[in-house]
Image 1 (cartoon, rainbow, N blue to C red):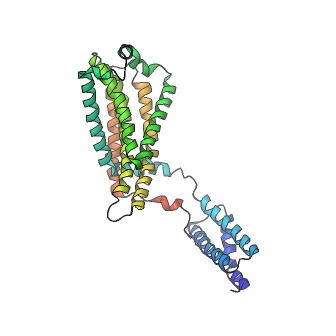
Image 2 (tube, rainbow, N blue to C red):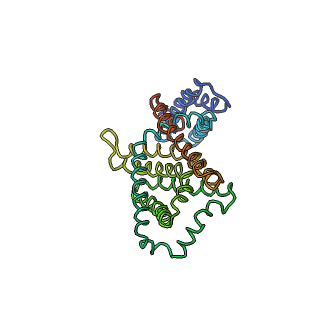
Image 3 (tube, one colour):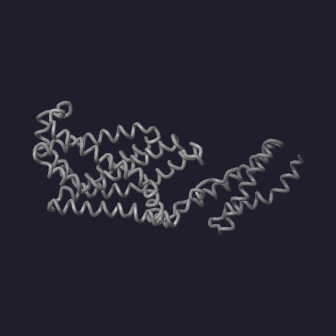
Length: 327
């Protein structure tokens, strides 16, 4: 191969790519041109490395490619207008697409939790391995109610938000292994059921519901969603479907799971605020539960009604905008 002729024939494209890379703003046509030139220059570099490894030419072209790559990455910066689209279209559509998983899991867990609470209430002797008599007395006497007001509301809201976000993230991340999700759910289900069983068994069932329902409806729903999405990811590599490989199915479900995880962050913040401000407030129990129920129903409407509408309109897949060209 005649190196000089090859370089001379293509140097104009490389220079043009470098010129475009130096510009702060590009039109749509110029951005497309930059991507095309980057792809072609990468191919040229590959050819030169195989056939004529001249270090000077390779270094110069590599520098120009790095400038082009940096310019392409620079165009992937954060866009504020993507936030409304995410929360009005992408996030609810993803929730709606996974609705069968989290609704089914939520119903099953609620049945299991209610059954376990009833069993502990009916057979209090099973509490012996978990709580001492003094701990039961303290729990009924004020520890349960005092838990919600022992810290300043803003600090407690942040703590609750963090704990629930970590639990939800753990469920999503561990979903590919499946079994850890059931362990995480089981531990939390057992803790809630033990508390409920103790309080119901000592005539404080109303207190239990009053201090759990205002925030628990939304909070537990978020946990159910996180766990269901994690299990959905795990199921993707077990049963990917007839038209996808296991890798494709796992990638699709994992991308969906990450979108839902991001969307749940502000929802869990709302749940944390309810637990810190509404649950221990001086409002009548019916008002506290009613307000919590209204917020919960609003979220369900957001996930199911707005999600169905968003899915019907079609949610654009913008992932290609954030990937480098393949060469």
